[in-house]
Image (cartoon, rainbow, N blue to C red; front, side, top):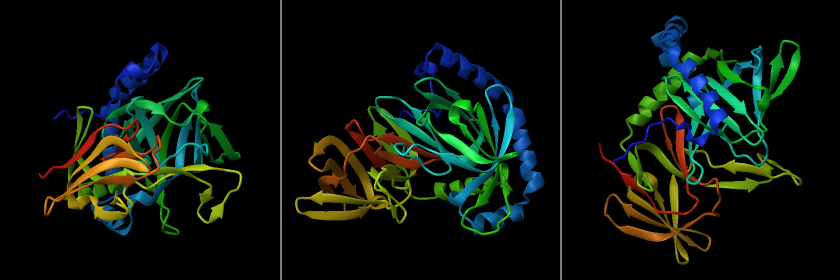
Length: 342
């Protein structure tokens, strides 16, 4: 199987974009050994094994959100922000506490990197797009397009509340995190928070359900917690319905891992982990797309329609070390998802 690496070719970018990313890449690689040593030192000094264990058992890293970041402006000025907020346009879908790195244009592939896994995120905004380069805490370099060139970052600065457009941000470093579900919880540094995510990932790796996703001859192996995610437009945020605004939203990557296959006037519900094979055939059928599923236990075959209002943001998504990875369902084509027993 062809197992693609998690780095992006510079062919996505024009000449000046390649020059910028190559410069950042060389600097990032040069300091990677120092970065890794620094992270190790922070972990040893700030978090004893017993503390890390108790924290991991007490909270879910999914709810860890940043409460302190450091921004570098294009001309080198650094600014610290407390309680940062990341404001996306209503038309852009996103996942809280993750940055998306979009790779590919025709067949969309994305990495969703959790803030706690980011050593540093670099941005380069041009007239019609924003590029992103992420140095992850395990030394990987992820480069691609950032989907929101209008994003604004706000928070409490030295002189009060401030706001910066992404076009005025050269890089972001995440400094402190807190569990949003626990009131009055002590803030953790990024390395300690990353350790919690690592512990979560180790649990995920022990899951018996592992998948191989094949798309146009490219295979993505060892996919965990795989899901088909529906994205949609809505005027509702929580309990509030806005009459004059429409927002982009998607199901959470790990939520509702239940496939509803429509067969004529009836439907069959089956959990993804109960299947050994799923195929998106590439055929559109009225209110969805054709899907074939084969059960693990009795090898029975289900052929029907997956009832979804097809949208350019709909995706097949799975869990990774740094967050999530996904491929877009549109344009409709044959995508197979096969269970892999280790």
